[in-house]
Length: 610
Ligand SMILES: O=P(O)(O)OC[C@H]1O[C@H](O)[C@H](O)[C@@H](O)[C@@H]1O
Image (tube, helix red, strand yellow):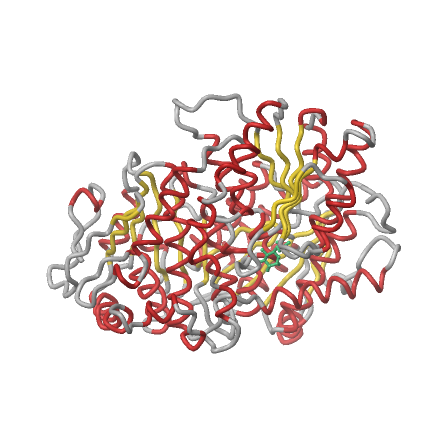
């Protein structure tokens, strides 16, 4: 599998000279995969390959829908994504018509209301519009992805909108997801005020699966269009279906090239393309390498390093890996967005995936990691449209890794638990406007700290209660080390400033404790990495951040948006605690910016004390 130097990127080290893997033409659909694996892992992949290739191999069984490749349950009914690129190519005329309509009507902003698989794929495509090739003609609508119940975010985005030139895409496979449903109530009401009841429905379209409550409601309300998905495709595998293609087309993206790239990758992954003796498919190798890295040396922290042009792919991949495999106490645990560091800040639990455009040089820091013996898979896209092949390739790799781990790669059992807890909390508190957690064990200025479960037990064992913020955080951080990871779960407005704050805090933890770190926003992560945090191995140590938010009523509902967000935070914390996870909640009162500054300072002090 020695890729040619042109496929390899300029300076990645060659696979070891004693590589036993045969040569592999690694490129399909404009995507190439170069593998830099430690010899033992390379050998394991090589040993597994013959089981997967050939007319009777596992890849042939995968295409035939053999559920015993995973857990032997309902997997067969979730394989609609395998042939999605071609199914979408057949609908190009309808997508062109949508693109022309929004252009003709002078739409400047497309607002997508959806969660998880219904929002993260469109967000990637939305980012590609920002770096649209120079020869594309515009003007093109901007895409705003709203996947939250944070009232500050909703108010901020709402203020930017010019309703006569805005199109709302209400996107939900099930049609019953809480967040888009409350967001819809808010924006339907606002649009009514701005446009009048008659014009309003023209500014809404729905994407949903056939027979959902949303399909019915959209027809009743007279939405301008309803696009139906394939119920045989789960949310996180849905980007190459109407859930990705509708918002992309509404924003003017020419999706032809994206689908061509995906279809080429689909062909490369078909069993007929996988002769027994030759390693010809990057996705299959990636899936085997990731799965075997977990079951073998325990490198379960899949660290995604996307280049600046492809940043938004990270959160999409996180959902794909975490929800598909983070269950039954195992999983590929994804970490995206960490600033690459020198080899000494990483433990031997890491597996790196780098992702870049061919025009971007490999990051030297990642090259150093490969040289230091970490597994690094360099995924290079010929151009932006090769994102289609990359989507497909990662989906296939995930399905393969899921098989290696022996789990059902198509369900998300632990996501549901948080939803149940949230519903319980909302029912219990009705219109009272807030969920209450355990009384704080420590209050320091604007910061109050709450502990239940494992952390509460740890505090009791330690004896003296922490007296200030640094000590409270220290009590959590002293539990984090070895092969653990740290998750910062912030239920605050997802602005650039707050994203930078999240980054600053997680980076400090990574460098001091040498553990993998995640920086997530709630409730968005509940539909993504949240599955692995609750269902994967009990190696996560979590800091949940909540804050006072602005008051925002939801038309027609007896509660405010902030109450939904609080109930989601508390519901998730309850499940993390019930699963024995080490978790601390800090609530910021008053000015959020001052509170976050105080929290960052206290974190620094706590890390120094460690
Ligand atoms: O598209 P929807 O039915 O609204 O679902 C949105 C998301 O919700 C759930 O939490 C699932 O865990 C996700 O996989 C899914 O993408």
